[in-house]
Image 1: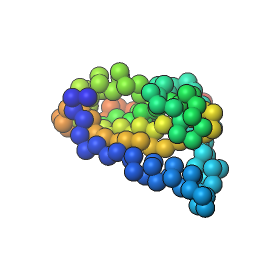
Image 2: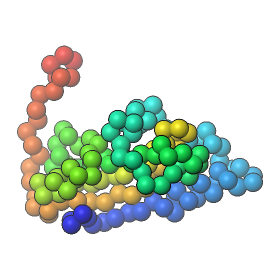
Image 3: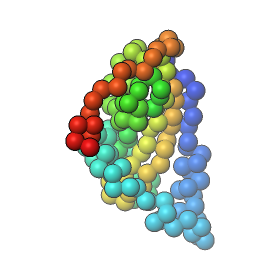
Image 4: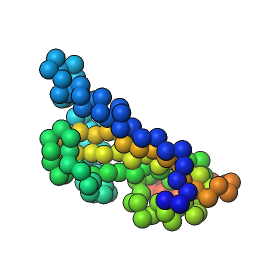
Length: 139
């Protein structure tokens, strides 16, 4: 992405967690590492992008990446999952927002944050006006 900055790669934490699973003393139980919330699994199944690597725990190809977006300038739409193609478009429309990419395995429930970064064109904008949602109408 052209405006990607402040990149934080969580590869070392991921590696440490995986080593904890494979260590002979088993300091980390598989249930503790493979504990994806059912909503996260559902989001990965329907909104995730197929990962290029297999699951590091069960070696399944049912691995998906989710890109969550957060930021004041996104207003009520902060915290939504966006496909990578839409992130490029958003980078031109918003001044600054954070993207957090999470990998999720549908087979064993492995999940881990893999990278986070900022996107945007740097122009400060006010958040969009709040739009009425179904929750507002029906409670």
